[in-house]
Length: 185
Image (cartoon, rainbow, N blue to C red; front, side, top):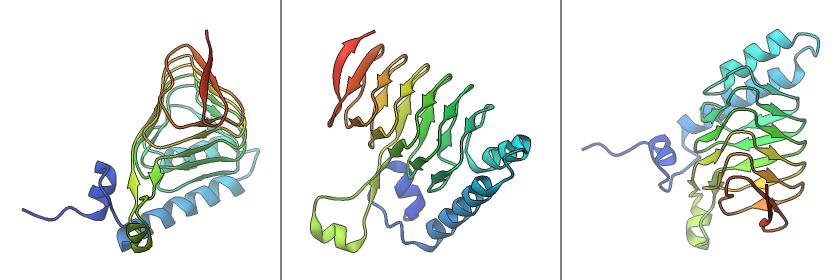
């Protein structure tokens, strides 16, 4: 029986060390592609789309306004008609899946990564990651933050500035820190 790699541990939700050489190299590759995308000629959307398609795991004709940053890229799966405004950051140490017709306002942060509460483990550099799933027809407002392990149901709306720490039901509007249901749609 072989010991799982740090990448395998990361993708399984187990504790892992992001400082391993392989993961460092993969993050560097993603950062280079993000840099190419962010500096690409604004009049060459076809070229920008080609860079995005090579960066993310699934690309179905989505558009992201520069600047965009991610950790690995290959863990990001974009549905049809996905749109993100400027300043999107996705820390994709686990899978981040977007349904179709999702809209993100400027400055949205989506993070699958977390650090242990135990200070000894934290000092050692251990991390964990849990996937995030965002359903169809979801609108996430400006400056919202979506944390690890969250599932956002179809047709949900996340208000600007909300910090989503728990699942959001379908057809629901959430707001606040931490985000709470404010109404049904």
